[in-house]
Length: 151
Image (cartoon, rainbow, N blue to C red):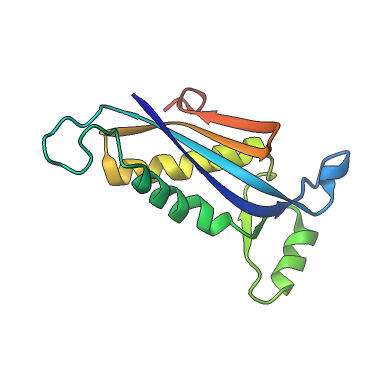
């Protein structure tokens, strides 16, 4: 059985090597969808009976690991030194420095790896992260899947 939880956050970024508009500082209303697989819990009397996992627990983990750190932050590539230096000069600025350009594809991959570790830590083999879909706009998104990661 597959279940999916959707959350939203706002963040700024720029793609420093982009040949068009995305090379400028700008922001998006990102949407992240997290899809997990697992068996429906059949145990009588437990709060999760009939569920793969309580959606509120999915929300808690995704918020802690991705949404809270990235919401209203500027997501920046570590080698975009001019912007990194500028952001570091702003007192208490919320900045997330990444090992790759903050494209939808790379952000989906980073989120997948972070969340896969978090769900394994909390649920072991009972649940499995299958996909992270990250919308940069309502019409553009990237999917990071377990098959893509080869894990």
